[in-house]
Image (cartoon, rainbow, N blue to C red):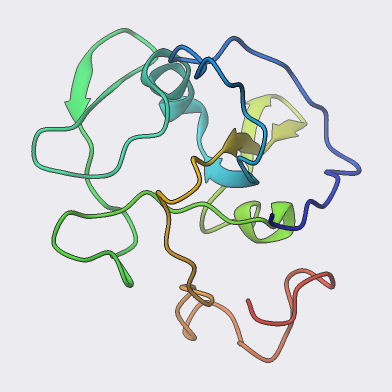
Length: 147
């Protein structure tokens, strides 16, 4: 499979998956990361990672449902849209994907969710971070040379 890089320096909270696991388990499903925000966490826990489409919904912290809209474009997504994940915690924690959020005076968090991706259900592509936001010659993750 795919390489796995341990998320050193982060606090990990285990949660029950939003969907039932396949009977064969997750053997061979690569670990990936997705940067998110506090306001999207409840939806992620309730429904899992959803790609932006006209009929996709997310649940706010207060329980209201809102449509999922792409916040940063759709590089390489195709007509059906895409949910973006990366094998790199460093890339997923870029402030564009996982903003620093103050939870109380002087206490800040970033949220990145660790997911497993079903083999055959993803397309690999190089960095989708626009050059206006990050110099492509400056590596975000020293483990990867093509992000």
